[in-house]
Length: 267
Image (tube, rainbow, N blue to C red; front, side):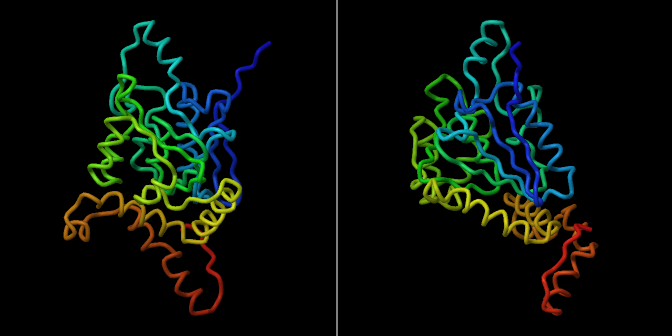
């Protein structure tokens, strides 16, 4: 009997959730079932107060993810299933990470190998990207008669200089990790054999930070990015309201004064 194994591995330890796209035989291409599994995982990441950061990566040595499972898409086309467009509303796994705009925990993408199409869009939706020097990025949808519907057209145009972004969006050209770090698209690039250690340093720093402060800062930065500065100062931020009324709001200063490490409760 053939057992249809899970598409995503999900592990939690020491306040870190590790989410691994686990279809290495097809370069971690994302089918509908994978999206359904991911939606359940992101729900749990948000709900579990013991989790302070999530690390998203792909299994194997060849790819983070090459995006949509095009064989499945071709089969859907043959069956008359309408083509998709921007966003995941009405599709399996909605809201996907790429349009899950209220996820309050930081998500770090650990990228090795190919991050193409929807795989690159997943990484762009993360708060941090740590890449190996063997990472390769591209949005090849224009070459396939598609569009970067999971936010790539929007995020790349915001995260790169306009002409650079348009060049990659309209041609589907690939670019290296060195190019990505040059334009500030990733946080750090390291040799492949040092990738896990680098990710560990980042997660250690994130876990060391006050969890409510991290959530408040992420919300404020994301919500205010398109606001006039004056409006950003007066806008309401739900996680900041929780932080300022929490015991953690005084714990850090108290620990500093007492010359000890703070003990965060998230309350």
